[in-house]
Length: 156
Image (cartoon, rainbow, N blue to C red):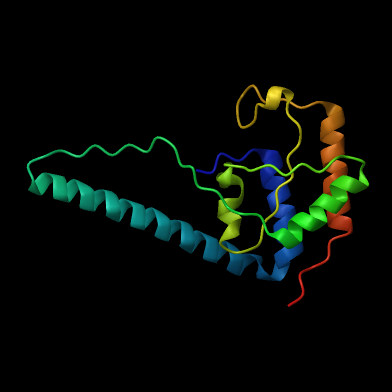
């Protein structure tokens, strides 16, 4: 559904454990499941309504989802911490807009998010041709480690 790779899932799970804690995970999973079911139900209801209206008018409706351009904004307080971790590794911070909403949309409903982009060969991402060097993977892992190590929860 969200086209996530194993690495992305691992990072998301680590961040969930950091932000939510293991005691709240069952409630979190339950809430996320309810939200996804509601989104699917609402989408199906809208499609059924369109088909019904078309039928009433003697027409046929064909509904095809071609692309979902949804995205989720990253939390500034998390991005500041992530940017500090990037700078600590001697890498210039670059702020990139992302249409890769699927990475954060599942979590955004229940928690703030931040995204770390790792340089890809030719800028190709979310594609079978995507590849990164060992050096870039190591820098990304080091930045993530620093982010987790220096993490400061948002004040309540």
